[in-house]
Length: 549
Ligand SMILES: Cc1cc2nc3c(=O)[nH]c(=O)nc-3n(C[C@H](O)[C@H](O)[C@H](O)COP(=O)(O)OP(=O)(O)OC[C@H]3O[C@@H](n4cnc5c(N)ncnc54)[C@H](O)[C@@H]3O)c2cc1C
Image (cartoon, rainbow, N blue to C red):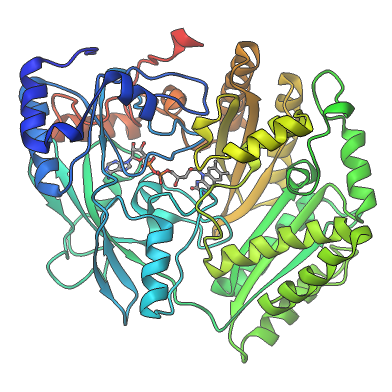
């Protein structure tokens, strides 16, 4: 692996891009080398092309000098390695300046965009033109790339979950400098993603076969009505029952269900209470604390948010089915909230100080509704990564933090975050088994089980488990990584395997004894024989970060 780039290559990059767009090691490592994983990447230079012609030029030079490249769209892959290359020594290719919305089919809702286009940018474009389509937002905030997220197979925060699923066509610069285009790229704006022949677009998600320079994405049409209801699992009812009912609901109501999100009381607590530093036992929040939080709010161990959509004719049927199926699962009346009720009630609750606990709960419901409506509330990601840090701050430290509160958790030196992203079969028994294993591993390693599930596909749940730590504390950082690895091992046998891996964990997902990965490697060798594209990303991997841990 190269730690230095040949002088000739640097000169050629400068000639191609202009000197301003070639960023040298020190600045490159400041901009792209830190991450919430608590690792530091060695980056010899970073390049900022302006258009696809320059991307092709970069690849030709890299190929000539055998330099490995690591393309990013906006580089906000927080919790998975941010903008850090998987292999140290790779040159970061920052595509954020390729940020054009190239075409929009307003009848079908198909938008063709470049990798630098962010969630906020697309939202503004649609709002300005008055188009009735959603931007399927993720919790990463408005500054994240639509394409970067989809290429990681990211998930929508409050529904419309599988982000790569919305890709209708792609244009990708391959390692030999040629351009791949989807089968039907010339037949319209991507109204039929399969085209004719083998479906190759899927090769470019979670892989390292090229640099995606544009994609056509199918947007979801705004529904006439979107509503959310919140439930607490009734005492005496099991998580298993809840999941099985959710599965039935999904198959009965199909697309009318935007999402079903099931949160452990520990995860919900990150939204409704301050991190209880004073209550910690052996560095962890005791279960008794969560019991009190739950009791005070008429909650139990599991909290559920269900978002539904439809029109004035379909919604009554959807509501009735949901009420009937959930009958007996919750001690709460099932109330469906729309935007205007949430806004009015929130205003009222915010004014009455002794109702502040309910005001916070309603805010959780309101943000779920906003996600289902496709509203990017902020350019910032949520405050989840800072929950532990903020809880330990004095009033003056808190004020100072809020003063510098950044768009980017990488900039907050102590903010440690690793996302464990797993997938679980939508079956009560499978989820129960997964939860038992996750709780045991998290508690053994000293982490609170911040478990959240959302409906992912018709047959699966997405598991999001953030591990929060102080990344300036070496021992805690090591423990977080050990916990993640223990989860990844147990996930394979207890039904919650990793479905999206951080840059530090490619070795946990790639198994060269498996025919799947052997085939992937053959494709890689055929398309990129010199391994210049993102070496190690979802491919054969010798963990270069391990010596840092
Ligand atoms: C509080 C919080 C909430 C979050 N919520 C969510 C959520 O709800 N859903 C979710 O999915 N994530 C979430 N995230 C994680 C993450 O921040 C997002 O997934 C984010 O969108 C990824 O960063 P990005 O869009 O800048 O993609 P990038 O970082 O640019 O891309 C991700 C990876 O894809 C590859 N890649 C990117 N662009 C290209 C290209 N053009 N060609 C080839 N390869 C490319 C690169 O290997 C890159 O490392 C959250 C993070 C935080 C901190």
